[in-house]
Image 1 (cartoon, helix red, strand yellow):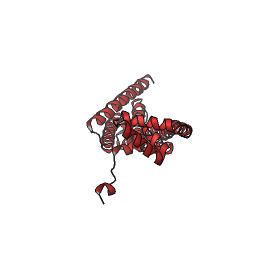
Image 2 (cartoon, one colour; image 1 turned 30 degrees about the horizontal axis):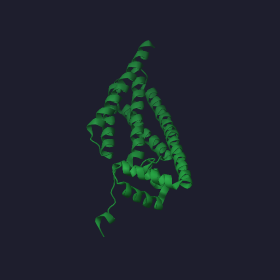
Image 3 (cartoon, rainbow, N blue to C red; image 1 turned 90 degrees about the horizontal axis):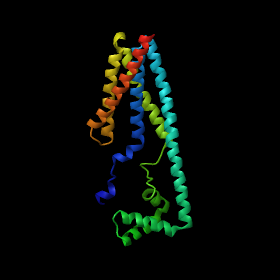
Image 4 (tube, rainbow, N blue to C red; image 1 turned 120 degrees about the vertical axis):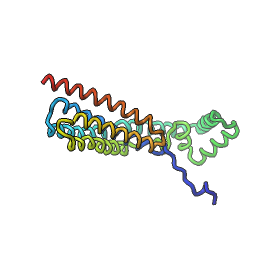
Length: 233
């Protein structure tokens, strides 16, 4: 048996669905919770108040991420289902027109008219709806919307990301929570950016700079707001 008959190739694109939700959740958990902690600490709150605020932010954020991802990805899923239903009706009412449509897609991709017609006929004889879903609508196993998976992944990774700044508060000196949590959050973000890049097969530097840059801005703004309200109080 040839190597092609036994070898199943793995591609980074197959990770898009869960990886996007995971990176988004963890990044948001680190940034939002660390920023909340830094803002409250800059306002002069006690360590216990900071921990309670951070814990509340963790729970609220995880639930918000789950609900937001579920609603968002469900909307995508609804659109995919509607498109597939429409395509199924068109295949039932005018299969020849759909065959011509698929043929023209393959011609545009570089096949000759005759070969494109043959490919369209063979693919449609096996799975007409699957062929049109993949090549006309761009719907595949890699990109299919999975609302529950996205919601659970986002909530779990948000919670994991949010726990890190909270643990940092526990070990940070009471008078140095703002700088310690800020520095730790940026380190966590850099590690997340590197891990996400490696999981997706991309270069590490650009994702790391990107997440650290925006995380630093979020931390600086909330620290400034907290200090301003603390001084006013």
